[in-house]
Amino acid sequence: MQVKMVDLYRAHEPIMEKINEAYKRIFETSQFINGEDVRAFERELGEYLGGVNVVGCASGTDALMLSLMALDFPEGAEIITTPFTFVATVEVIVFLGLKPVFVDIDPLTFNIDVEQLEDAITDRTYAIMPVHLFGHPADMQPILTIADKYDLAVIEDNAQALGATYQFPDGQRQFTGTMGTLAGLSFFPSKNLGGVGDGGAVLTKDPELADKVRIIANHGSARRYKYDRVGVNSRLDSLQAAVLRIKLPLLDEYNALRREKAAIYDELLAEVEEIETPYEEDYAYHVYHQYVIKLDNEQWRDPLHEFLLSKGIQNAIYYPEPIHLSKAYQFLGYTRGDFPVAEHMSQKVLALPMHPFLTEDEQRYIVDCIKEFFANGG
Ligand SMILES: *Cc1c(COP(=O)(O)O)cnc(C)c1O
Image (spheres, rainbow, N blue to C red):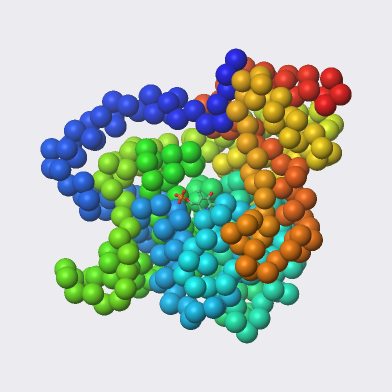
């Protein structure tokens, strides 16, 4: 049996006719850029999220970059995030001449450790960038309280968690990406809401910030050939928006299916004592962008990764190297030992196939292979 990490064909096959119809309509008007579908998608996503402004852009990386640009931080401003994330989070901070300051992660959720957050704040700190990693929301209540106390912006990296919710201690539930000052979304094909190419969006409740992001993403121009500030070109195109409009009404179902698959894995893997299955905090509605297991003994991780590949099962290591140990980010001056939890997790984690159309037979085969691996002494 061959099992893919993500099976996009199974996602698109049932909606192919609708996609073809939408493409036909777009080709008829040939409004490929700034077409009606882009505006409609922004409106529909904003409504889904309970009323936020949505500005489409070219990628999740750009969404984070545009969010930071809109806040006009001075050069060298310190932005707090974690070293256990996809590189884009950190890359955009550095690219804009700002300074990433890392805080270690919580070993259960892989998200920023709120207990250590306040220690990282200096008088040069301007923002916190929590990442809702693997689809599990970061612990937003303490993050927002600390941000408020020190007058910091909060930019949520929500690339992996669209549709996830966070429950505040008063019982109120909010979508990830709607709690901070701004948030970045990615529509990379494998994300929970994926297009068929690159795409992203900035979310914000503040209409003025939304306008600013829109201007920056359009070469710094609000009126044709008048430039109010230095901008970039970052657009969501009509063909992507059309696919996203078809998939958005299915997002809740996709996420519910991911949770069902996660529950099946949890149950099947409960007998495998060498493995720890993912954790879900009481405050979280986890949307399992990834299903990430931890190996009790990190020596088994790479051999299990290889063994599963040999059995036709795709699986991946997110992330094999925390950013502070990556070659490109050595200049930040961190060393091994600075973020022990992130470093340890990078040795223990393994992501198993996860998508809404994974079958129970596939999951049983995966878990049987994992059991076979340990039965043979690892
Ligand atoms: C995917 C991802 C991004 C970047 O999104 P792109 O659309 O690929 O540019 C940023 N942050 C995280 C955590 C991601 O997973």
